[in-house]
Length: 105
Ligand SMILES: [Zn+2]
View 1: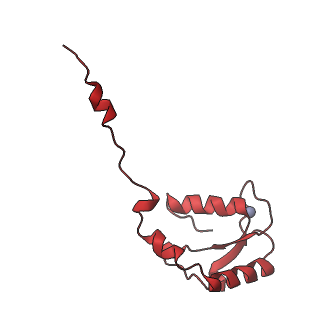
View 2 (view 1 turned 135 degrees about the horizontal axis):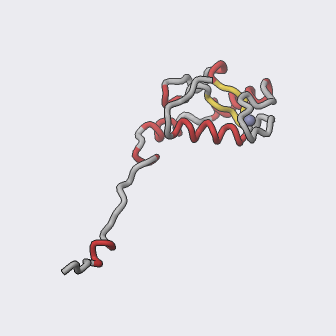
View 3 (view 1 turned 180 degrees about the vertical axis):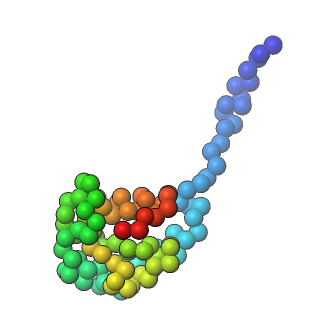
């Protein structure tokens, strides 16, 4: 009575969900070529200060960020869709786009 079966515990498997289950990621990665590097350099030159200024912001642009993510229909090489951002804010933006609904700036 009430005998536990220890084999059940060992058979527990997690379903693979998350980034590798998202089909859009692979196509987005393919877009980052020399055209992107040129645009990014131009953005950092024109916008040396971080666009977002989230809490923890360093204030200095070291990366370029799409305002409207490509996965959401944004234009990858459109200067008006790219802003300079610091590493901290870029990470916050990436995290918010990965999970929840994007917030309009
Ligand atoms: Zn910042």
